[in-house]
Length: 504
Image (cartoon, rainbow, N blue to C red):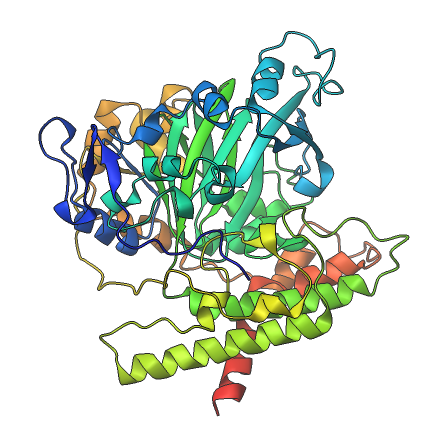
């Protein structure tokens, strides 16, 4: 599997008209940063709950990337937009249910501000008052292939990742109500910088996964979707969702949201146009996650490909180019297992020195690498990518302050803010809230975990809940079967058994 970027060592970032080396540390004077690169990296690699960074990107040239600026840079470059219907249905609007058009940013801007449908152009079939548009998951290394200098406008070196810039990032441009269905990323953690407009994030801890009714249909490697529309849930069909702890934060321009590993999230644009940039940070745990994803791919493709194509619904997410063959998926699994075992041997021999294997590097170092996947065996060949990062020793205290605010559950926010719905919902626009939450730095790490320690509902109880004992069982579909077979808990167990078998 090909990464969207190759490692770029020694890349300098432009700042204030001069080049700044990654090794220089935080900016001084007018652009002083509240955290040094090493401090920011320690936070990212250690923090187990979402938080918002303030005052870390004010000097980034990418802060000027409004949609008008990007339109000028990209000129008439055609981009794919996902089109969705504005609705209040209880079912999620998955990407397989959306329409897609190719358009320039100039056409997108004209359509998004139009009071009536455009008379011509790729958006002419969609009334902007009834539909939203989203240019999502745009890998900047591809988008700016004719303007590679723009990749240096993004400087993740300020967060302790030297050389990481736009080449390892993706760009997101959408209209109001454009959204990403609730899902959990299998690989890495996430840093998101808001450039224009505001986005509202609904976040759920990993412990709440069972309450979100996970599914792998539509199938997309590294994404586990929720069957629940978390902003308008059908509690009759998904009663366990009542137990999920929701944290909501509105991300404003200039802020950076940290999303820890395996946190579920639903994201929606709440301003007329939004622009954001993100980068997925590889983690040590990704070695095992690649095995789990390989098992899932092998299982889903084998079972769904056996269905009658005339009656089967669309099950492959548009981000996946094709359903790879069983032989290729088996090779993929073999390579993932071999890479994991090699990493384990190296870790045992050299516990203090991290070395990335070439086999491991061939699997999804960053999130969602399907853009260039093909259905031939070359997908399993090793490639050169940035190695995954080892977890540092956990700190007892982290430097939370006015410049790093934790995203707290709605229940806690209600207690602290009187359950305000407007400004308080952002969890980030009030100086008073920032100060109060900064003072809770010693206790907020374990607040949510303690509240879910006693949850022991089984998968069977979840499936039977909300249905009368006298109700006849509904017909079992292929997707019903897959939801049980490739449930993250089941895949985790199968992975453990397979690795034990292979290592014996």
